[in-house]
Image 1 (tube, rainbow, N blue to C red):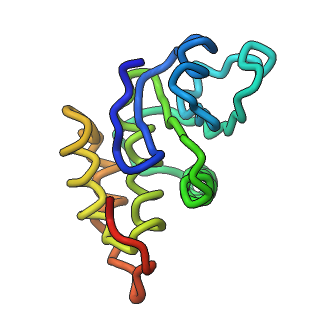
Image 2: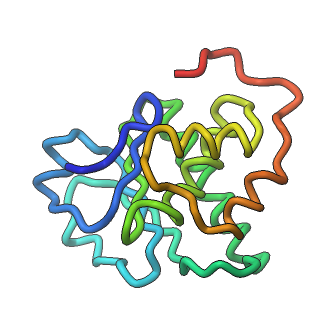
Length: 152
């Protein structure tokens, strides 16, 4: 599997993966962010699938799409808190998956969007070059009270 470990139990990568690869990597939850890559769940037995289908366009994101991305990031953070190995994917594993992962990091660790952006870029080379996604992250301040657990 060619995914990058972003944080404990949180991975980012491209799609597609075989169900065998996912099971060998002990992935519990697979997040599918590429609108064009949404396989039927029957092809992924034993894997929880979260769908967040959107397109990678460097233009302002619509409110309904932003809400969906935010809700998915919240769900990803919840899985990671429960110690479930979670893989967030998109076509190339760089922008759409990166935005969801960065937003999940802000929820997990109380960091700013800018810090989450840098974290993802350090962990996954070439990630998050879509300027619209970067602007969303750079506009997010750190949470007033960060969670008690340490950044990993």
